Image 1 (tube, rainbow, N blue to C red):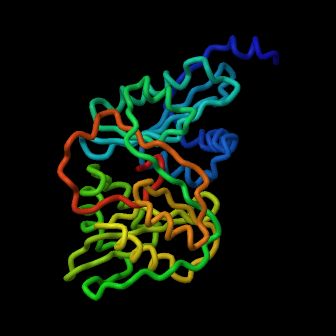
Image 2: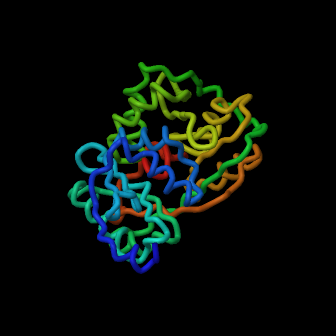
Amino acid sequence: MPASNRFAHPISVRPMQPADIAAARALSQAQGWPHTEADWAMHLALGEGHVATHRDGGIIGTILWWAWGSDAGTLGLIIVDQHYRGRGIGQRLMSHALTRLGKRRLQLVSTQAGMALYRGAGFQPVAQIVQLQGQLGSLQEPPGDPRLSLKPLTGKDLPALHRLDTAATRMDRTTLLQHLTHDASGYILERDQHAVGFALRRRSGKGMTVGPVVARDQAEAKLLLSQLLAGSTGFHRIDVPREAGALISWLQTGGLTEVDTGTLMQNIAPGMAPRAPVHRYGLASQALG
């Protein structure tokens, strides 16, 4: 079909359904993104989404979003087929998502190509996110701390994970943590039998995704990851804030390479929030935060 006729077809936006996952995965593959159908299914099950379609029903755009608690949320997996860009489809998808989310503190991780769209929707850059990935080798063992102990994650640790994750992200991600405690492996870092950090790992994409990682500082994040990744090989990915430079350098000693950088954006300026006792050193995913 000639391009002029194809572009003349009206575009519709509707809620995303599980039956759309195969087509959504094809869109993400065209972007060079590694998401499997299982990854798409997990993200959709935890949130909501819309798709843009042309007249024959083919999917040419996607957006997903997640409402965390009553006042926060994240957006992600925002894609428009390259043949249909520049026609306002991204703006329509964003408008639907923002209407559904209402007045919340929202964040997303933007590619360079998406910056103009998100700025137009009221989002501001607040941090850089470094995507590290590769074939994991041997990491340099960090110095120990006799005051700290590590233990494998169990389902009973969900309240501690919730407390730490909420402190680090200012989002109530109970449903995400419930899902991950079933499907991910992880470790809890304790001091005096009190949880002060955690790190999780699950299968997704090309291999293993590491995150969330929450700790009081980079040294404790290294302790968690050293235990979580001990003896592991194969493909691993982790998304780390650029400001955690020492942690990034340490992960690079184990064979992980910086392959991309995204921009963390928020629709509300951070302001002067009280300093959190713990920090997020690894995202669950760029979409989920």
